[in-house]
Length: 434
Length: 112
Image 1 (cartoon, rainbow over the protein chains, first blue to last red):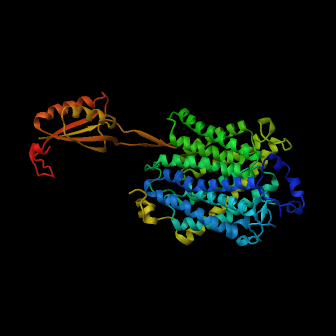
Image 2 (cartoon, rainbow over the protein chains, first blue to last red; image 1 turned 90 degrees about the vertical axis):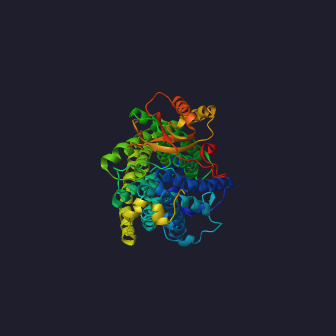
Image 3 (spheres, rainbow over the protein chains, first blue to last red; image 1 turned 120 degrees about the vertical axis):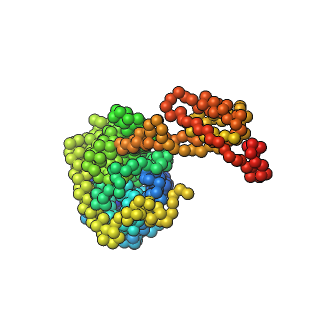
């Protein structure tokens, strides 16, 4: 089989041309499943599921008003479930099917054709690899909803998710992670999906939020989070689950995974505290929501960097990303006036961009990174910027199409009455709290 | 009989209850309420969005007692709930026309 797996660190990234030059039979000759790697990857896969349900559902749900709690959680669960079904139907083959080009994979694995319990990918059963990647598709489309909750119809969310996964997610996943993919061949460093998952979801959330329009009453009417407590619980689950996301992206239980693991601790810790310190510096109190927001900003920023920077590189990256995200959500959003309800762009988009570019700098050995110095900092950073810009363009175009189709099919927004009464009752016939 | 209705700071409830128990008050009804008076509301900030809340959380305590006890109850609440700050609350005293114990049908002060 062709070499199809995530970048597992700088050494591999810089040795890309070498791998690309390997004849196909070199991979096929001894396809051997490693039980340790497989056990870790099965664990990582369910850790990423826990990031979505209940992690992201609680994180986002707590940030909405009480009347939209169930709607937010249900939208997240439903698009994640849809993504899983689409993944085994045409998603996996679009991302990782053999014989694809720069933008999309081959279609030989439609309906998982030919992928059996005996298929091997690297040192893993291919079905484990496919399951792991499936959870990434599921969480990314769920993240986008942070920009659109509290006003988008449930039906519109489902149509949007279907089109968006197909037009945006699968191609970008292919470009980053599959051999022959555009970013993969460029040598872009993206350990666990900073471009595919976070920049992609953040930018798409912004575009969708602008197309959808503001929530009624925003920003004059108060819309405080209905439960920072639940958001805090969700934050904790996201952090725990993120070890599957980042350290799992080594696709093995190895040294690369260990670097990703410690970086996922320390970048996040630095970011959580940096957000609170920034709040103090701006003359406010250090807040619980600020801490949670910083934690997520740090996790997002360290995603592309996880196995690509040193421990203190990760600390700096987390802190810097957190401070920039504070300004994105507290200054940039009000200044530009868009209603990205839960700051999916302000944290995932902005934090992802800082992380992607920062990875290019901090990968260098002079900053303690695992890079071998064969690519200069400037050159690597330029590659990172190109990957970021390409992602932004593709996400924007794909989201405009997906939202337009959802609008034509469903009308997109709930009625004024439903929005005022809350989407829980209006869209689902339930109340979160009785 | 008098109905004594006091609006107090939530953290003062235990002190008020203890003070009244010492006076021999047989029972009270407590509710969580919100309102405003001279005390200004608080400002809450979520990711930079500032919200000023006008309503401050308070506890409402209601006691019915005989006329002889009423002034001592008022005094007890006034002392126990006093922190010296704006927002300590208010006490209202109303006349009560009748009281009935539902289980026995007793009326008047014997029902208290």
